[in-house]
Image 1 (spheres, helix red, strand yellow):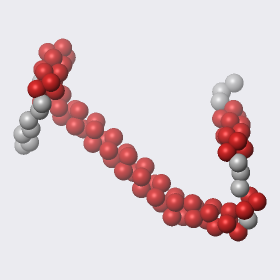
Image 2 (tube, helix red, strand yellow):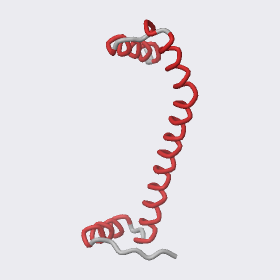
Image 3 (cartoon, one colour):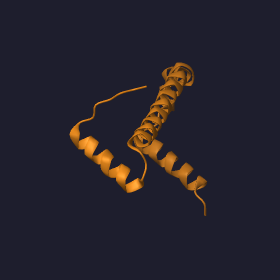
Length: 92
């Protein structure tokens, strides 16, 4: 069981939505919390994935670049390569 207090403007919006949808306020709040938790879980997984990449492939890429700085690409070169890849993937 969870009891919460909402600011009046949010309570008013919740009341209006409950009337419009025919759902109970409790059901709407449960649905909203579930969606928010899911979004937060995805964000946490994305952060962990990025951190894992930085610790492995990111470090390896940095080491290769440090050993051979001529491998570096300018921003314009990176943008051009990304545009080419997008064009290759887009349906024709």
